[in-house]
Amino acid sequence: MKPRWNRQLVIDYHTTFNTEGGKRVLSDLRRRCPFLGESINVSKGVDVNKLLYLEGQRSVLLHIFKMLHRDPNEEVPERAIHQGE
Image 1 (cartoon, rainbow, N blue to C red):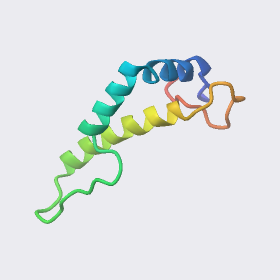
Image 2 (image 1 turned 180 degrees about the horizontal axis):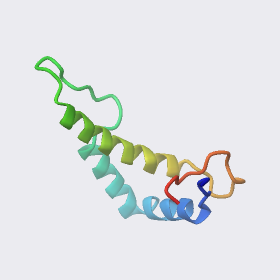
Image 3 (image 1 turned 135 degrees about the vertical axis):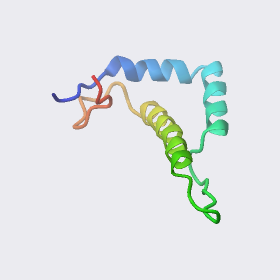
Image 4 (image 1 turned 90 degrees about the vertical axis):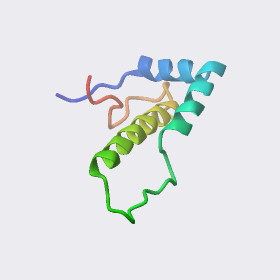
């Protein structure tokens, strides 16, 4: 089943995170979750579970930023935003 483009969902992300409160929440999430430029200290080995946990946090932030940079008025993209729909 091919994913669908959900224009309203893009609008909802913009509405939510472009408010003053939404910007504060996004700023807090960026402080709490690794995003870009953070390295993992591997001098004592790699904790795979921690690595997977951090990657999960990063992937959520990346999704939010992708949605915020998407134009809700563009035509249906080749790749849909939300694969779970």
